[in-house]
Length: 303
Image (cartoon, rainbow, N blue to C red; front, side, top):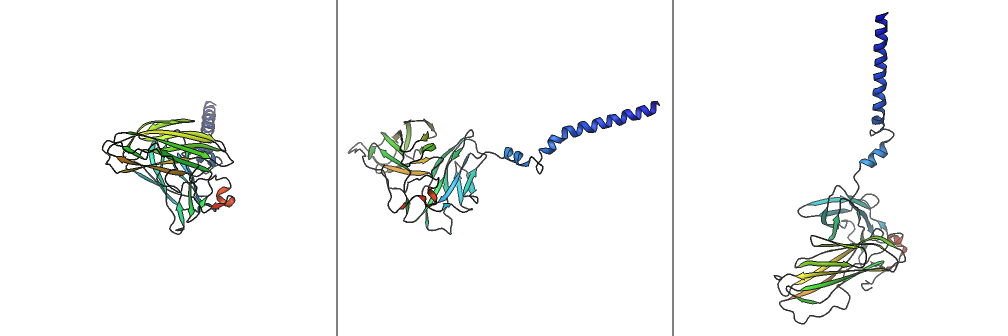
């Protein structure tokens, strides 16, 4: 009798252990790849892209898969390639300041890049959307975002301050969001201060990063940057300050302003006209990059 009771107790203990094991193992099994919860687990495990966007073929929509991009930092490079939707992504980055470039596919020699050497500030606590456009030779799209940059003087002496005014206009009839103005001081200039008409202007390693936020249809935002010309810059040097603008709904745009460096302050002239000619016109992506807006054969640079 005692032996039978002992056997029953052992068997009951085994059943309880088996049940406890499977009750604890079942949630783990359901969360393993290949089972019912695979999509949720994969999505949770995938690192969020710190920098991403779409590469567009103007008038046709997203570029085919395989467009190469490169992100270049201080002594490092990271490549990316667009997928079938023309989208790219850079992941697993901390806080980095780098330059973003796309490359024209060898089979599309009829295209130009709208922007180049885009300064980007990748943050570990946020995402940045940068859309890039390529356009056919001889054709520039009708503008949506306009950016203009002008210097306070065409000629500046060594060891003297110069101010830049950057104006961004949303000339479309649609609002844009997450507007960012990025301006990295070129060689020969050192940043003194930066002010913005809305949002916040952050300075880091010579980069002015103005987070404008939303820009309504027809609305304008302005950033003023004060920089100092280096005392060692050779007279006769031309310094080009190039500014870039991004938003979630539009492609990146650029423009630049030149100054000539003098050995002493003579003949300093105010700049009143538009800045240097660059193909820097942006247009809203929502239905506009697939031929909905008219393409023009003249480049518009003024506001």
